[in-house]
Amino acid sequence: MFGNIQTKSVLRKVSVASPAPSKQNLKSSSAPPAPAQAKKNPISSPLPQSVTKSSRPNTPQRKTPSSKLTNGSSKQSLVRKAVKRKASTPPPQWDSSDSDSGVESDLSFDSARKRVRSSASSVDPSRTLLDRSHPWQGPPADYPLAHAADLVSSDPKSRPAFREEVATKIELQYPSNSKRERFYLADSVESDGFKSIEDIGETVRFVCANYLPAPEAAKASDEDTGYERRLTRAFKGSEGDPLEYKQVIDEYSELIETRVKDGTIEKVLAAKHGLSFDWVKRILDQVYSRTVSPYVDSLKDYQNGTDFVYGELLYALCSEMFKETGLRSDQVFVDLGSGVGNVVLQAALEIGCESWGCEIMKNPCDLAELQAEEFPQRARLWGLSVGKVRLIRGDFLEKKEIGEVLKRADVVLVNNQAFGPDLNSKLVDRFLDLKDGAQVISLKSFKPEGFEIQERNVNDPRHLLKVRKLEYFSNRVSWTDAPGNYYIATKDPTDLIKFQNSLARKRRG
Image (cartoon, rainbow, N blue to C red; front, side, top):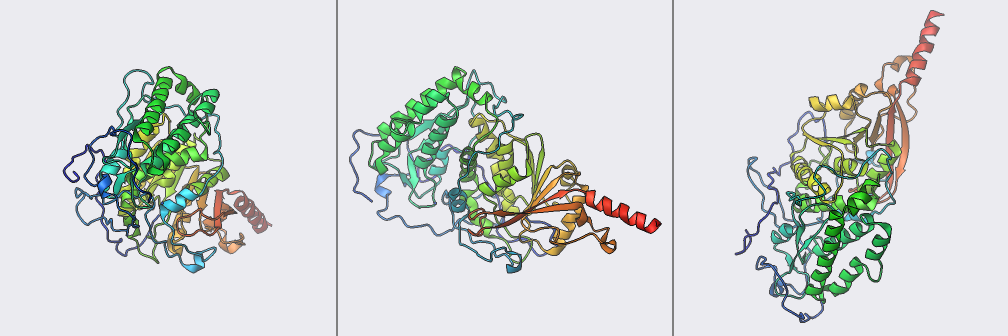
């Protein structure tokens, strides 16, 4: 309910406690001209009274973060105050001794996530992108999505994107046998708020580029006559005609729906075995903006100087890590300290592998559950098959499910940038259960440089790890824009066995 208009919403309700975790034996963590006359009365649907031309401010002010997650029981709901894609969040204060650069930056999570672009992701010939969970023919599926229209309806800072009294409603077809997503042509007045026009344009661009046969894709994506260019011309920086914009959307949606029904899109997807990085990012951004962004301020609730510090590895770095480890769709990925679940979902989408995460902090866990609900529905909307996702709430040193999956894991990620020596030591002991050849990615090395096998330390489990030091470029993590290092440790007992055999011969001789 907003104002006097009630809108049907499928937005999830979340209950989160704002206080940081109490001290304990810490074991885990883890983005104006004068109005123009519309040519005709817009075809529109009722929106909250605030989403009107009369309520458009002359100079939008940047929003001061105020969306707090409140104390309460698991059934207490949170009212969304604004839908934000780039809400400002203070960087975690890492201990300077643990930092590669010592440089910090007041970057928002979302702004850092959006700045990095990369080339195509790896292609796995054994992977099938085509989603077969719902028939590609017959009645369209009605997936329980967090529709963009619901985000706008819940945001009192949203205004019509065009110079019209009431925002026009459109429905956008995705490349699957599904009902269309609902949008209002309305944008937040805040620079960091949800922008429907941007979301629509990006989605149209990626669908045209990736789901149509080459000749038709080239025509639909043409820089002068393609759909994205026509949408830009119709918008004209809010001075355009909403009817013309809607007409282009309808024409595009009819084309995509036709290509779904005649089997063209199904055939195109069936021939693909990998997604480009930007394609992955487009889908993950949609999930994040509809679930985490409205509550991102809650991620500030951590204690600096403890194992409970929150920071995100951004898309580009995670993609690089997947490539370096050779992660494949038939393997198992585990993120220990998975936060809101970003990397878990990225592995399931980009690689198509079975993907697990475990997080102990309540607020990130609650937001991770929202993402986990939205992610498979949005993947189906895009016609994509993704890996199985499992998110566990609790201590990764104690959870039985994590202990069991680690025995099968091929790649384990630990963002241990803020972990203390005790927790890192316990993690090394846990790695004893890993199979030979399993790889552990970390921000700090579990094995000191120059640490050699000697008779007095022959039983140290760190000798089972062969470590590679790699560099990541700038804008790869949420807490700083500086470059840094990460490490990949492979469980390989070869050197230890050789030493033990040599030691045994020495003792016998």
